[in-house]
Image (cartoon, rainbow, N blue to C red; front, side):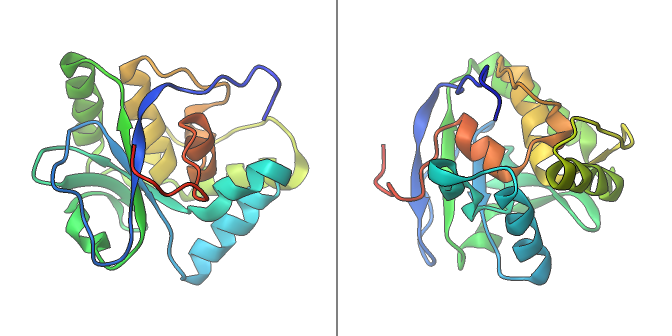
Length: 191
């Protein structure tokens, strides 16, 4: 990350190992998780091209989703596009729940953006653009406005809560979100 990197303040995060889940959800919060599919491994490999040394810990995650209501419904970008699902689908996976600092109005705006994005296509061209940047170090982005990757969806929603990122939101990876919100997988205590 560049020298002008500034973390985003948050209330903290909670780690949920497989089989456990939060007692409550607040719209606008988000999760970071990881899988074992080849695409998951490829995303983590790509993130390792940018994150080295002490920052390598942030490459643990390859997926994220935005909490859109108190029932644990989430908006997430998947290969089939941006969908509304439920966090319970990740109950058998480890995930970290990031509790953001935002007003109720800002949380509503973040969720409204995610809901507006439902049924948009997955950002395969954006993934290619991110890959080019990770492989070459160039700061060049391309893609389509109505397509998003998971972390781009969450980053664009977080912009509605006054979060400011030093890179194009469409190019933010799950590792970037983890670093911005200081989600340390080596420190799994609840805050």
